[in-house]
Picture 1 (cartoon, rainbow, N blue to C red):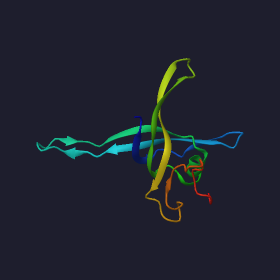
Picture 2 (cartoon, rainbow, N blue to C red):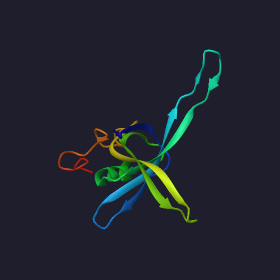
Picture 3 (cartoon, rainbow, N blue to C red):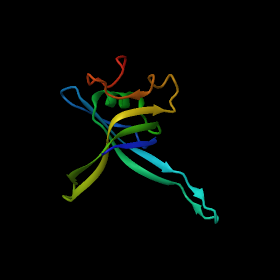
Picture 4 (cartoon, helix red, strand yellow):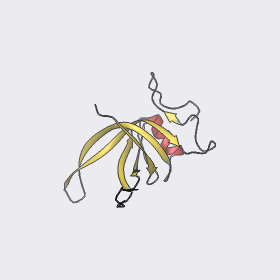
Amino acid sequence: MNRIFLQGNVGKDPRITDFENGGKVAQFPLATTERGYTTKDGKEIPDKTTWHNIVVKQTGLAKVCEKYVKKGSALLVSGKVENRNYTDSYGTDRIITEVIVDEMELIGQKREQAPAPGYYAPDKQGEDMPADI
């Protein structure tokens, strides 16, 4: 099973790509943090932050990202992990790990900033956002 759940904060405003067929893709970094603690013997363990490459391929979810997700937004996302190969500008082959999102929840948003209920997933007809957005 390839399933991941992440709760974190957006590192920069989403990059939105529009396609001729009306489709959209949103991409942004998401930071997750494991809180530090003190062991029984007094050793301090610091916070550990991990960055994740988030990709939203569903047009409706990408529209929600475009309208409501900004740098610093708190999100809960779920999806699957995929690796993608590419060649950088120096001709070096690279592998990037991405989280392909299929469900998303905007958390910590003020009511006037985010649509209700804040949770988006595709329904049976493939529509993946409220009709008013």
